[in-house]
Amino acid sequence: LRINTLTAQGSWQPPATAQDTDTGGTLQLDRLLLDALQARAEATNLRIALGAQSAQGQLSLTVPGATTRASGQMGPQTGAGELQVQWADADRTLQWLPTLPFVGANLQQALQGATAKGAAQITARWKGGWQTAAQQLQAASTGKALPTGKESFELQATLNAPQLDLTLPAAAAGAEPGAAALQPIQLRALTATLSGSLAQASLVLNGEARTT
Picture 1 (spheres, rainbow, N blue to C red):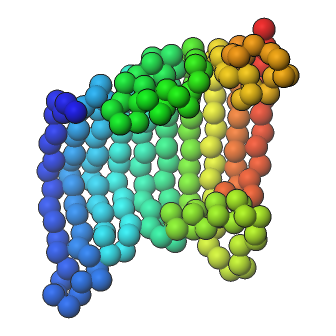
Picture 2: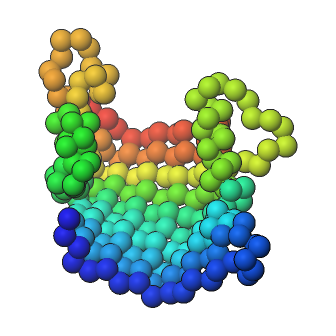
């Protein structure tokens, strides 16, 4: 595992008293930079409160073909922030993923020969805490309703893809039995909007999809 650059600047604030160990202390990172594996991760004004299990700050990640930026704060029950993903070269990203140590082989197996060519953009905003999000996902997976009065995790996300050419495994593409192992799909002027809670959300799709 080769690390080209790793720098950090910040401070550690321990619990106020020896008896006050439940606060867990606070880590303040004014700047964190990691450059490795053809990826660059950077954090600024990152504050992690271990006792409160909360964090806030700005994060950015650049990998071959894509850039992600996020800013906001999140605790167990409350939080708010936004996320932006610029996928400029989908093919380049998919070629990079199998080169990752430890997980690359599993990712390559999961992709099953899938390819993607084109660009896409994702913007998202959230409101709510990570614990609330986990509870909603669990409720959605088990088909149970959340108790009344519980805090809600709300998500609004939009995907825009002017031109995206995919090659997906036939089963994932919903092809008929006996179809070719890989199914080409051409997406044009695609817009997908997701809004609501993780337990109950609405999805609106607009665009054109063609198979060959």
